[in-house]
Image (cartoon, rainbow, N blue to C red; front, top):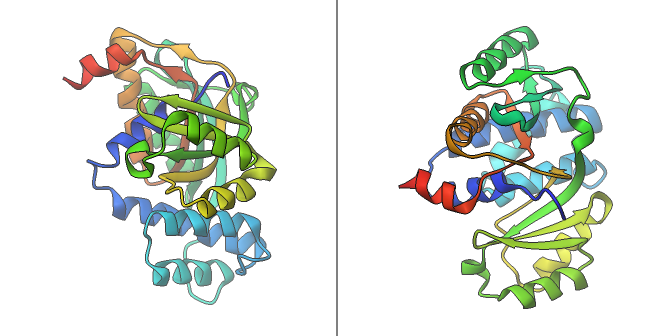
Length: 251
C-alpha cells in the first residue's frame, strides 16, 4: 500500500523512551467521555466507545479511569463538555497534515494550533484540502522482537486473519484492514497469540512526500509539538523521510 505511516513507526520506537503516559491518559479520557455522550455508555452497543476503550486498555489505562470517563460522558459524573473537530493544512516541504482535535474552547485551540504551525513552517488550509489524500483504515502494529515471528509467517497470518495489506519497515510490521474488518482481524490475530503493539482506526495516506535536510528536521519537530498539545487527539501526515537521514538525525 502506497503511503504507509512513517510517523506510526517513529512514534512506536519513541514510546519505549518517552514518558508521556499521563498526557495520553488525559486524551483517552476525553475521547471516551465524548464517545459515551454521543452513543451511550455501553461498549457492546456503542462501537466508537468500544474501540477507544480497547485502545485505553491496550495502553494500560486503569479500569477505574475508564469507568470515570464513561460516567462523565453519560452525565453520571460532572465533567467538561468537549467538541471534536478537524484542522487540515501543510507542513514544511508541502506534506499534508490532518489533525483531529477535542477541545472545550475552540477559539483558544485554533489560536494555539496556528501558533505551532507558524513556528515550525506549516500553515492551515481550508476544510477538505488534504482529506482526499487519505483513506480511513484499520492499522495494527506488531513488534517482531515481542512476537518472535518472521516477516513471511506474519504476512501469512495477517492475510489469513482478513487483512488487506502487510508492510515491513524499520523493523516494524504494519497490518492494514478495511475499516469494517478491523475488529475481526484484531481478534483473529489475538487468538493466534500475536502481541499487538497498537491497533486503531487511522487515516492512511495514499501517497507520500519525501522530506530531507532542514525540512525533515522541522517537520518532525512540528509533529512532536502538535502531538504534545493537550487538545490534539491524532495527527496524520503523508511525509516520508529516508532511513539514512533519520539515522543521521538521531546521532
